[in-house]
Length: 384
Image 1 (cartoon, rainbow, N blue to C red):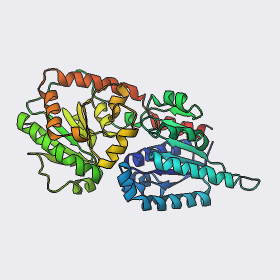
Image 2: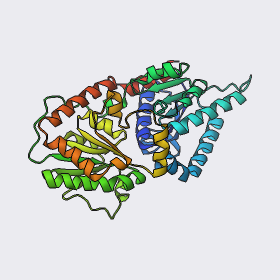
Image 3: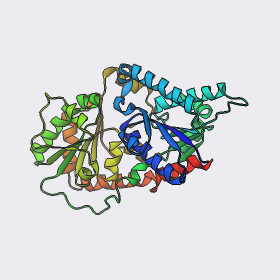
Image 4: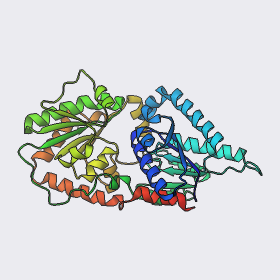
């Protein structure tokens, strides 16, 4: 298959990066007459040559409360993208992560193409979702509609193919591996150097304003306690300047802490231990074999909804992959500064604790598949 145009939708910074990598892989395989790429994304997709119709990455949210506040923006973007699809009739429509929005959009595309079928209007784009929505974690019934609205699901987690085979066997699922494997080069291996006199603590409280508002006060206080007990060096890593500006100004910074914008790999390559939100970043910590204390705090209403519908025992992805708590997790009321500090100090002061934790993370890393995930994804998209 050699498409002439491809519509992509990414709604978060991580999806923006992944979509940009996919576009480059597709372009390498389509020859001199490359397709036109357009859709929703952010600066990474724009740099990869995608025509950006709207930037949903500027409005990424966590939980229903955040989503409700920005519902109008999402509705406008949805209508704009659907109209662009109607006018341009792309050969392929690709949702990149951002499952709640993208599945609704693919459903709308399916309805639109049904209306336009006929002798002179036979538009049938290939409908692809790259990164499975977490239907295996909550509201599994959402998977039942996917065979009707999806031609292909490209999975980056190894257990998803088996889950769909049991719970929604009509979904075509291809496990392509995790893109993280290609991003940071060769990871550290055993044996690790012994921790120096001043261990390095890396803080990763998140990037969205809501995350930082809830996470930073307890993370900062926990880090201060760790520094007082170990004289640790401390680095706060944020993905962009907007996140630094979103830090609650009334929260004092830990003594001697430095702030780093971007270049997460540099910080993790030198880290002894991390305190991180339970997002994709915990997998990056696992890739660098950095023992990590994971936390998650959200609004009361989001938590009440979540605890009733979430069907998995862990939030941090390394724990889900391992099937056990290789990272200590502290959720909602359990995520106090004392609890985070105590868990961090236990790793830094218990003989052998860091090494054992690193060994467990290396085992998790091996589950992410071989290099070349986005290349395999591009090949799967173009194969049919």
